[in-house]
Amino acid sequence: MIFKVFAKDELTRLFEVLSVNRVVGPVQKGLDRKNRPIYSFEVVDNFDDLRLDYPSTLYPAKRYFLPFEETLSSFTLESGSWEKHVDYNVYQPQVMFGMHACDINALNKLDKVLINSVHPTPYYASKRRNMFIIGIECMPQPHCFCRSMGADTVQHGFDMFLTDLGDRYFAEILSSTAYNYLLKIKTMEASETDHQEYRQVVREKSSKFTTHVDTTDLTKILDMEFQADVWKQWGDKCLSCGTCANVCPTCYCYGVQETVDMNLQAATKTKQLYSCNLIDFAEVAGGHNFRPEAHIRLKYRYYHKHRGFVEAFEESLCVGCGRCGESCLANINVPEVIASVRYEE
Ligand code: SF4
Ligand code: SF4
Image 1 (cartoon, rainbow, N blue to C red):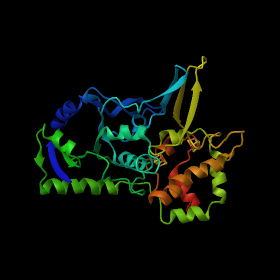
Image 2: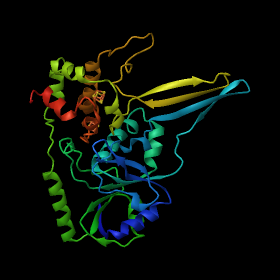
Image 3: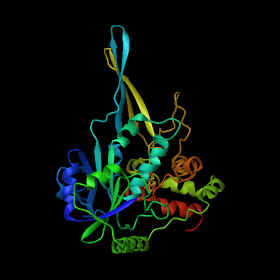
Image 4: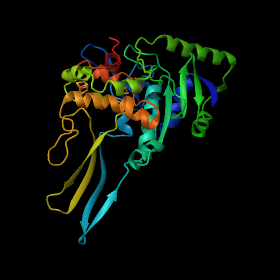
């Protein structure tokens, strides 16, 4: 890894250089019902619209590489036979400008399933490989427990990662693309003082976490507590609305729908992200539902994140961003659910 520093003004110049591509970054999108700013990843044309000091976005950046709805293929009947058309829906490179460590770690987890597994998905892979990612350091919010999940820092999956040192940025450079872009602005080699200030920011971040999750032996505990009453208690509160999966940066479950035109001359296969908490998620042909009860569905979401994924990939499928708990109308959140399964309440 190469370390550089550059004056804050230079970031505007870097944005201009990069903005020949589509740039997506955090912007403010109004206020919530408690008058707090809402931040969202949007396409940005003007550097001044970026809010790089944003605390957290309501939704993750997922829709730019794992859209809620996507056409997988279309079919047309031509001269008596079906012609298949496949489009990976990637039309230009994309710059993600200002992702937090947890959201980059979420991408790294998605890569394991959607690119590096035995059944890779080219729709995701093509978008992911056309992304240039600039990460930015953040300070923990009350709902963040990314440190407990090992996702408060990120070692790979980005091109450049920036830390605010007051009058300048400390840049960690991982890719040759990032190195070459930095040649277009004024940078300096990072000095020992820069390194020390960087470490001070990291220490300050570590000291500010107020929410923690004990993940010690969690997979074993989940195995032991598969029949525990706590799942029923949380399930009784759950509205089966699916919001938690919608705002989660690592949820990737989906359904596929095939539609045929009324004139029987064309058809489309569409993929839609889905939530395992929705009532019909486990319904199969013939109408049988393998998980008809809310607490069973909620339990399986937790088991997928904190047990099944760990067994397959040796890490959890949760980065501790806290978005699901913040958005849940029933106030169901990961730290409290895990604590109750461990009987720590
Ligand atoms: S846990 Fe909360 S957000 Fe998720 S489905 Fe249940 S009520 Fe909705
Ligand atoms: S399960 Fe909740 S806390 Fe974990 S990554 Fe998903 S939204 Fe974030």
